Image (cartoon, rainbow, N blue to C red; front, side, top):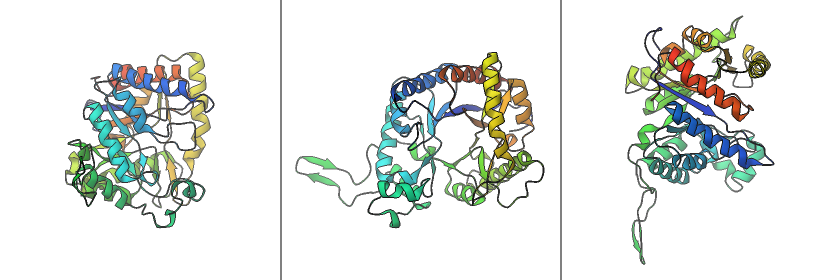
Length: 345
């Protein structure tokens, strides 16, 4: 994003949709109410993240189908769907269905690779084929082909009294052009750019061998900026290619004293992880931002990666209460967004 004075064009939010595993219905209902609130506040989009074997939304596509019947404008996205958990043909049918139900508001965000805890879940997920499943970028290519209506069956015609197509149904025009890829490494963002996809970059990236020095947050932002520049350098649309940044931001403008205290404790607990790289892929985490909208806007304008984007998808913190999310979303829409030049739709 250019310096202050040039408006942020699109503002969305991302949530896990946490709930009580012993009583999941209220949490799912609260999430649907938060999506409706997002539309009422003028947010451009809402994005759901997958959580399997946890008390978080395991089927974003089902939630978004329900949300499509309670909303009329706000766009939907997944950030991201790990395709290792999905059959591309069946997922293409689900995506097409939700896009039709929502009037063309679906933005599939994707990633590839083995599911988390692969050795523990592969027997349940792919009991007969785990060792031969292709979990590479080919899985995205297969999904894209089906969304575009390319043949996925060797039969079309009439069988008895039933008619069959050789391509996935329903087909929703334009859906394949709204696919995003969640990139966090030079390899992944280059591939996404070469395919002409849009790019989701988040608060987790690979360190790519960079020395973190004494300011890991600055190194994170510099790496993220480099990845955005690389993506656009190979994308057919060049600098016009869509990139959305996702960070955890917690505006406190209308928060109560209790909320401010809990939010500060949440960020303090998570901050130490941002100082070092994690795991074999040397993953880095961005710092969460908490404070007034004016303070958060100032920190964002100092972030070189943020200055490269015109779209954001703010990640809501984990494990907060519904009333907390209402306050945070309201402040994002009425305080933080306007401080960045954004206007509600």
